[in-house]
Length: 367
Ligand SMILES: C[S@@+](CC[C@H](N)C(=O)[O-])C[C@H]1O[C@@H](n2cnc3c(N)ncnc32)[C@H](O)[C@@H]1O
Image 1 (cartoon, rainbow, N blue to C red):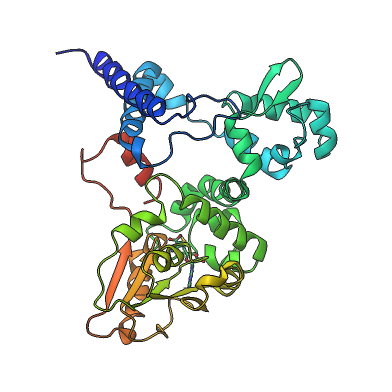
Image 2: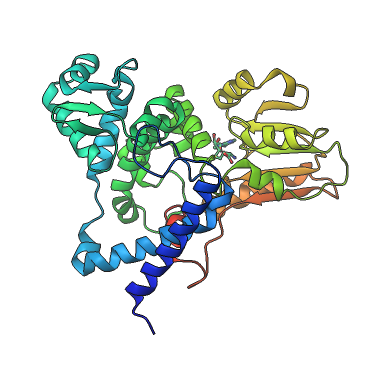
């Protein structure tokens, strides 16, 4: 039998060849970090080959790191640079009409000392976010350009570095202060943000943080395998073509919009917190306004929309302990007609050995 590293190398070789063939056949650019490279790997055509390469390179990389490397490589430092790029608008202060800028240009645009700009960006460059084609000159890579051009990814980075990261740092402390608690306000988030309210209540006291969270979620929902199209394609059939769907905790309505576009006679009601539904309502395109509506509703209170065909909860229950997840489901009961369906979309934690460790890692980060 070939040694594992040879096996991994051949998986990588076979699947990178498939990717290359696909890109050539479809007239795409070669994959690179070049600022104009874009994301040529996205889309379902390359999903399996891409996943195979990611899994095999992840394992090979870990084998190459060895025991000490595995324990010492995870770094919090990248988040420092990313947060700084977000906070000081470094990706967007990069002059739009110019292909390159000096550290001094970016410093004067952002108001940061030049030495900070240089250190932050040179660190980010080691992750291929920006590059330095000539000493002292900064240019975009594909990743920094994506950051400059995509507001939602910037909101995601802001939310991760300013909400989740501080909470993560305090999570073990929370386990010690509130052992085995099921209360949503007994978490690292509470210690980090010095609040007795749980995360969603705390965010609703700060509309800019709440809308950053919602924007970040809408970026997250475009990630590989998470796109609304998967919900649309696997949506259960409903008895009536003009079914009523209630999207509980539906944020800005991305899923309801996708469902309404695909099934042209269904009607959707998106329920969420007041500021979230206000923004969702404002953003909704005119052509869908007769079939997608927004309603302020606290999902712990009795469901006000009775007799709907489907009550959809996507990525809702995973935010809550069993005690509160049960309360959310119980609040639906008075509204349910006999044929109603309650549809839950969640990641399912795999059993031992069911998926690669690479895939399992992504799921266990959330659950
Ligand atoms: C993880 S997000 C999921 C959003 C959306 N379902 C999706 O699939 O993208 C959780 C959502 O629950 C909403 N939420 C949190 N607490 C709520 C409550 N008590 N009542 C209604 N919505 C709530 C949040 O505002 C947020 O939009």
